[in-house]
Image (cartoon, rainbow, N blue to C red):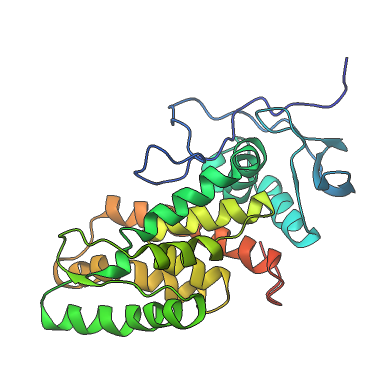
Length: 271
């Protein structure tokens, strides 16, 4: 019998996206949070990468793979998530753990399907649907979105068709092919992070701009929420909406951290 402990709870990623085809999402269930069952948290390099160790023993994902990440920087963040847990373990406060589980258990075996879902967002990309008013919102979205659309055409070769309002507009096959070529294919954790950024911003263009170093996370997140922020500036935000935004931001920020670490941007991972 193996002396390696399994985590006695399911930390499979729950990506906050409305798309049911999202392979990084599993149904959420209301369960009592498990008690912390370990004292020491550490990491060690192993055959699968940099593994999480609890009380000296490796941890396994819900599908019984070793929980490991590709770099020591990400391993430090992973360990920090587990070390920060109190009497109860709350997966909602562990975005990198959830993302790593999703990448290892799901995305690794469905790379092309996940990449295709990113490309599908480009067909109805947030940045291609412009508000027709009021004037202030139009000016703000143009200022935030136009540079990204211009970058996609200039650097990726993807000339996107823009429209006002919500009426669907078809993108040219050449543009979609250019977007597809820009989506990472490896490692699985980077593919998963790209997918999360895409679903949480509603834009393959914003996600790819972050992945390719054309846009920092803060600007990308501001761009993704331009319309909501405009409405909040007029009417205010209720507590529930703000809580949802903060949860989504935590997941998106973690995905951006993974991107920075795995694309060697010189931005070290931090807890």
